Image 1 (cartoon, one colour):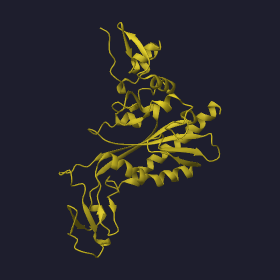
Image 2 (tube, rainbow, N blue to C red; image 1 turned 45 degrees about the vertical axis):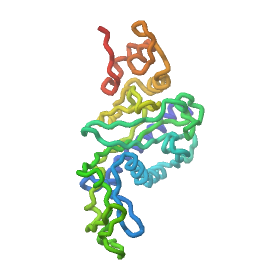
Image 3 (spheres, rainbow, N blue to C red; image 1 turned 30 degrees about the vertical axis):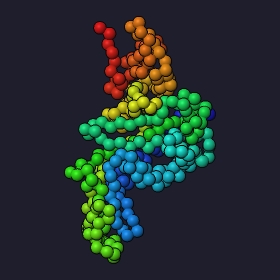
Image 4 (tube, rainbow, N blue to C red; image 1 turned 180 degrees about the horizontal axis):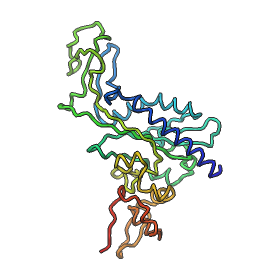
Length: 307
């Protein structure tokens, strides 16, 4: 595929994705900003509220959004291929129905606000499939087959409860009461409480922000988690939404080459060999100090200055 044709498909897909995310806030939240998901229901019409645990929230958000994502794909002429295994990349693969060479990767990334200004997440591995781009280990299609790699970011605020367990209650709504037993009968260690309507149940999360971005445009130059080979995102919320990552002015090729070589390439600095794990050393290693001003320093590791 010609580069110009590839860029045309990328531009069209990204534009459609960005229009789509603008609609999602109204889909998942009420007028006052609360999540419309209140819990889950059993056959006796007991409504069990959910925990604000990030893993639980993330999975339910994915389920909640999936019908809309499917609608987006169909309306833009794409079919969706789900990751065959839980730890495979990406979450969703979009394949153009009339041109199977047009393939895009989309990961759903959910995280909560910290101090109302920051939020961060991982952007996938910089290990096997990222380096060996013609292989299909732990990835739906080889990395090089994808025309673009995107994130659908979901940022929310967690609701503070006085008691850590108070966000997991059991309710019955008056207009769907099941006529059995006493509403105050305990289930396990918890009581069943009657309420007038679903809106009176406090949601565990609220105040959503959605954004769509190419992965490389919101990347930092730091790993995203502990000892695993994951690429970390920048953390400033405004910069995430505006795709103002460390590599956003350098370009995708610099992002690719940096993360392929992260912690592998070495250089001699002050007479000692060191592993390259920041963008400043990598640019120096490549002999392109003329590009240092193109690094978006706000999201990068701190640059050491020689005295």
